[in-house]
Image (cartoon, rainbow, N blue to C red):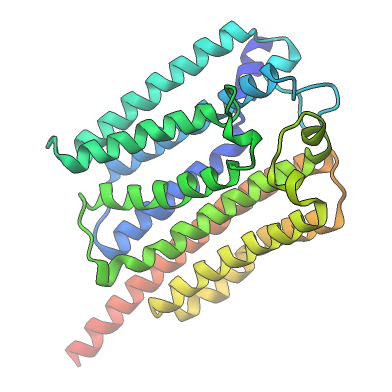
Length: 320
């Protein structure tokens, strides 16, 4: 039982709201602009979750191998660090989730492209392979990009534009009208920015240990004060992108529901400014991940309701 608990802990379920939020936004955008396919959305979710868990396991393995997960680490004790899971067991788990990611991803592409093997299929497959590689290479290997300050870029790209636009295109079977659909880049970028803010919260917490371990994250590079300014930028710009998208669709009244929902995210920003790096950040990470998911759910529901209202209002005006 203790070993099962250790594996569940290694999966870091508190990070899964980010993958869930990305798929929710992508599917809702597809529904607002064209149509949504429930089966494809479910496969997008399973693929995203498999990739997220793969990344978490590989991160555990990479940091442990490099000695970053020492007794000086502020965050929760990792699976390998605890000694309840061996490195060989972790390697097997990583391979298993690579297989899970590939199986779910290929099934998703087969349905999304209706069994047609074409250039677009190959392109998405290559993007999937890059996502798997990026999940592992974040901390694993001599040239792990997470140790050179490039983790933020990867998180923004894969949790933002790749996850959301990919979900959108697969749901619509690659139907995309640039004139009407280009604006989806706003919420896609917003989710990427908020996901990067989660990573930044984590990296601010670990700033001293990372510096001692030669893990050069953004906070280590620019210092605590600038890392907080950077955190402010990520959150404020993300929320602006969300609200601008709603306004561009003439969903004016939804702002009165979306703004209160964003208070959980704003709270994280205040907490990061008020609190020195410490174990308190473990709570901040959980609150921010759940706060993002809560906001996204409210955002999706209110935008869908506004779209329905606008459609009904338009029909009523036409009838009159």
